[in-house]
Image 1 (cartoon, helix red, strand yellow):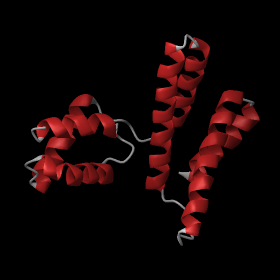
Image 2 (spheres, one colour; image 1 turned 90 degrees about the vertical axis):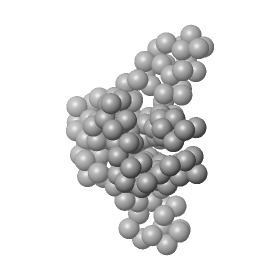
Image 3 (cartoon, rainbow, N blue to C red; image 1 turned 120 degrees about the horizontal axis):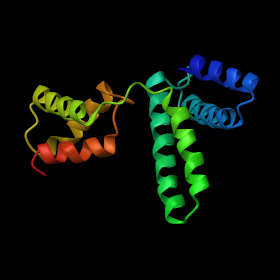
Length: 151
């Protein structure tokens, strides 16, 4: 992951793509921050690819929140800028599951774990995050899991 992001950053620098350079610089800074935190916690290797996927997912979520705020405030040019950043970040995430694929994945995990009630929601969400890191919106998945477990 790091190499892909670094290579894309270099390409963007050579092509003088300002928005892409700025976005990838933010991604690299977020990863570096997590690396520093990991080292102080005793992990000398820094963060794993799964953790990088988590960072990227959180960055997309932040931008979606910003888009809503900008649109509410009538700042459409800033909302568009956030959408461009989301598109750049998404290039490094695995393909997102469709709504139907997400439903099927959740049903499969629930049956694999034998989950029956809302008490099992934490286990189900943990397993989904392990199996489908970066492939689904876990906020939406949480609502679906809750509904399927009778919440």
